[in-house]
Image 1 (tube, rainbow, N blue to C red):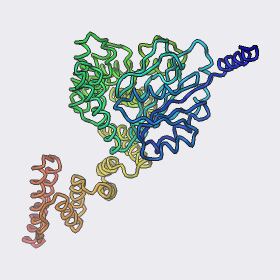
Image 2: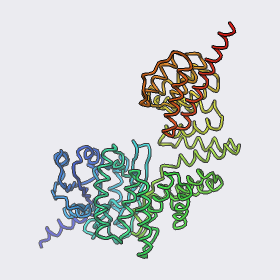
Image 3: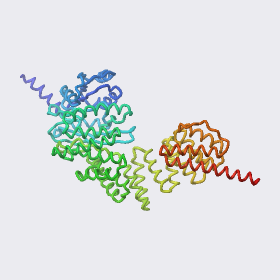
Image 4: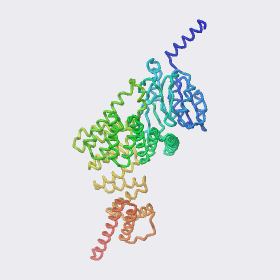
Length: 535
């Protein structure tokens, strides 16, 4: 080799060390709705875009090519890890960045990529993954490896949740990726569930004693609100992990899923048991402390709730304060925090506990924290308004519900309870106004329609009662071919409505209908008595 060639090589190596290059590696299929957002977030921070397409039939490939991506087409082989490993094979740069099409790099973090790759002591980097749910009103966080040196033996295993395999120490960074993959329509979430669960079931069939696919399918069931299935699969994961002598801490998510599913079906004691098991395994387990707090609150174990909520807040602070500048061994990188976005709700419930014990200063402080930190203000104000309403602080409830209506004028619960508040304040016309708005939004709300009829009796609006009665018959699919010649006739119809509702096990509305029947017949008796006495 000539001296000139040696100099060229030396200059290239020096440039590569001082200015490392980055390959973005992606696997895609029919991602035309997401891909631009992803590539726009990172195009100025990478030197090469590698896209493995597994069979797109939309404009995905065309969009990727417009960003200068190198496209490699591979038929789908039923394994995300296979597809991911293909993408690594084509990368030519010093570092590899992994993103999915439904993700985007947080704008302020893009410049940090270059800074990290210049640090000679770092080879594996974990990012914060911010998962968005329910129109971005809820979120969860995870720590996952997304950046690492190329040509270093890193690869993936697992047909669905491709698990990264590496041997070097991991640097935990604060770089954040926003994941929109759970922020989809119900139809698309169903499609995603079918695809994922089908692959996991195949994996379970092929390797029935492996707890990992049981763990993941439990999470999938939970996402689709299939609570019994989530409990069964997650318990299987826990049992199989024990039988195989595996580290139970690697299956903390299964304990969380069992606890969360029990909570959703109102089995709070079972929820408490599994939450307690999880925090005994790992006292820093955020999700376990959160579910333990929620379960204790619903069990009315308020001292235990306060203790669990303090543990949750301590864990939350510990997690958020250590997202950066931490290097650890590669054993525990993919950590998911499902409840990191529930901090505001913990503060709100703490506020309720303090207020219930007449510790108003502490209570109001916690409530202000909840309002300031909430990512779901509508839910926050609904819970707060309901607390005030149920505890007879009707002026505060009224103010809170009106604030809620400023956010969402179609909040039926707020309109309904404002009607009750106005009824307590003996403003019956305002009561009718709020309840009529509620049934305009939710026409099938027979319980509210019955209450409207009851108020109209008090106001003597009998024509309105007849109209309301007809609407109730229509909603309940009852015969409307009835003649009303007296208040007693009208009362009889409400008696029929009450019987219909009782058969539907709608106990409270049925009682309202029976009371209306009784009031109408009493009014007719009074009228008859007045006629007979000539008064």
